[in-house]
Length: 178
Image 1 (cartoon, helix red, strand yellow):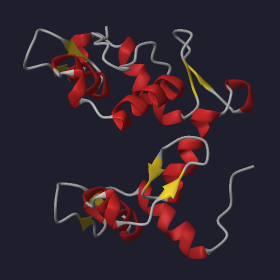
Image 2: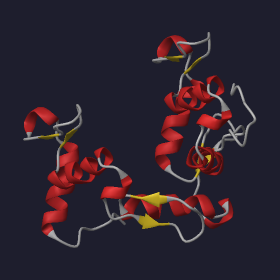
Image 3: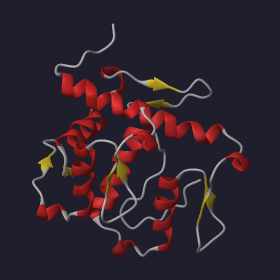
């Protein structure tokens, strides 16, 4: 059975995702190139431009994670659940399992030939990757450990749980992810 909208306005808003941006009025961010089909999506996006101290935050009861949106906290809580407690999205080409469908979609790029995808290249060394978050993580190897905040270390530990990464940046250890 397909999910049902509780309100007609929810269905109307949902139907916008099936339309091309040229067919509807978009809501444009005044700080970056982000465009939204729904005003509520732009409102949520605008929080990304605010410092965490300027907005109401949602605190995880298990770890130091804070979110600017309740939906982000709910999504984050998956990192604390055992794989056996949640529906997983399994790659049909390898043993990768994700707790979120979006992570599986991002993962699938690893199975494409490098010539078929956009690569993210380090400007400081020959490292390149198919995944933007891996370049972001890689850039830490070029920083002194004192420059890396505790929140960054926690983020990578969370990524390891959520996305199946096997390498993290922790303490003063420098890692060169593959």
